[in-house]
Amino acid sequence: MDPREILSSRSGIEFVMGDVLRVLAVCMGALWLPELVAEVSGFRRTLGEDIPNPKDVEKAVMKLRDLGYVTVKEGIRATMGPKGEQTILIRLVRSPELIEALSEDDRLGRYMRIWDEVLRGFR
Image (cartoon, rainbow, N blue to C red; front, top):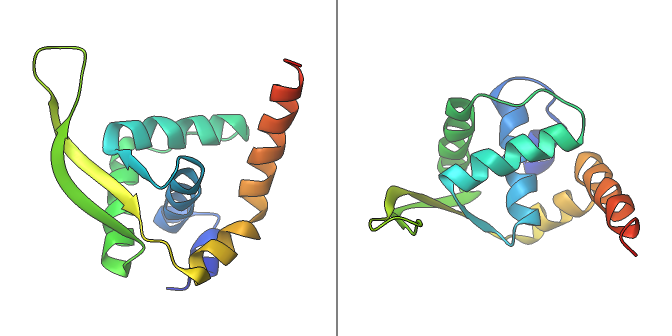
């Protein structure tokens, strides 16, 4: 599945897959699964949309892994408690094709414009 095809989806798991790619791009290319779920929810809220089910985000990650767009590695995420949290680290696999598709993506552009307006309010 081509990155543009994923990013143009507006329903189903492919829609969530596109938002996972967008969020990873904004967040420097890597997030732990709990952080990714929270950031995808924030991304959707910022755009005034319903948030996806966390299980759908995890399912989207696994489909993106199978397609080669992300890597997944089990690990222990640091927490404020004495023990870390066993979870998975998701990393974006950067490719010219994916970077180009993300740079032309309308949803990502809209999200960035909203944040630009918000941040201008603090100047």
